[in-house]
Length: 76
Figure 1: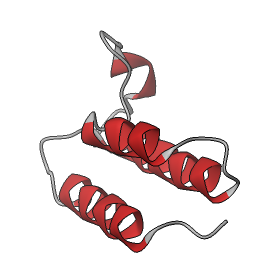
Figure 2: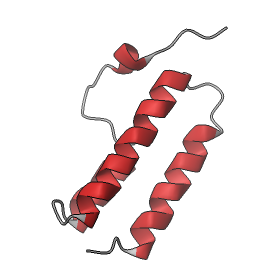
Figure 3: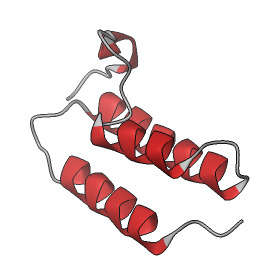
């Protein structure tokens, strides 16, 4: 299944916003990018619906109340 254009464009936008966010820890930034890619792949295989993709991307690919400190890396 081909991923809809508006989903690909929105995912690209979210990635760019996160890449340029200097206040975000690089480890968390990388984890969010990985989750975005996984979400797009799940849509490509037809495992999730458009609503589920948009909800996931809209939440920054974070689960409710999730502690992202496990993905933090030390900065020099």
